Length: 341
Ligand code: GLN
Figure 1 (cartoon, helix red, strand yellow):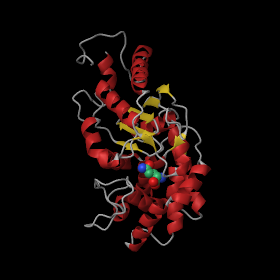
Figure 2 (cartoon, helix red, strand yellow):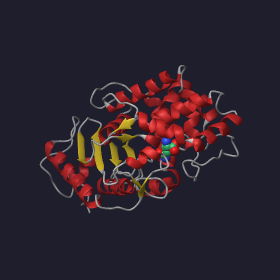
Figure 3 (cartoon, helix red, strand yellow):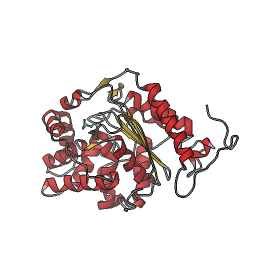
Figure 4 (cartoon, rainbow, N blue to C red):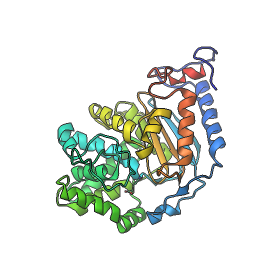
């Protein structure tokens, strides 16, 4: 349990240029402790419905925090790559908002939590649209909006933009893409439901390819934390300084992540962790502490809702330790490290 703010003194403090070495070493210790505490938790199972995902090592557990000043703190298997899966959804939504604006985008997808599983074959009865861009139906509608002709151009544009946010070139895992394409009949059913409802155009295969390819992009914890830190840093990549995302739309994306990012666990997540976040069936979770941090955890054992078991435990602990919850009295917007002072 941490002490009250300001009750202990420290040799250093945060500054406009980032976290000082002393604070950095404290932060590193805390991440190392969280890694040690949860690394042997073996509840949950690795997803196998996409056969290639079943090859993941259930022992893998990586953590990364990236500050908006570009400092990075890591633990465990943070370098191991995994496919981004549903964690591509907020970024794709951002691109749709940038390209088409709010009004047009929201004709194709809503912003209401569904309370249903990520792969539910269902539209919002009242609006006739997918509930939100974080469930598969909404993400396929978004993929249809950002696809290009030829279809590979849209995929390349997505991967290139994600690489700018991560700060390194990213690529598609072709084996996972082939595996998703071969077994994705449920997503095909969703896409045809969307076609029938007039939400997507007739290029159903292209929309599905855009979606499957986005999900099959490889990242590690550092990439994801940097992508999250780019969101936290009003769209500017913390290390390169490059403007990557239009900041006007990020608030919409983070709002939907906050209310819908963890599927049918989203309410609990908002209550306990209180951060805009997104999970994926590969076992990753990333969260954004606005104006402060990007957080990413990877561990492929999933709970019944399809969220990483160790990922949720680690995020809960990080959030409570540093008072990161959006509505925590200690979250004053730019100085979470005050807890260590
Ligand atoms: N590609 C996966 C699917 O469509 C993504 C799901 C997820 O990560 N929850 O089933």
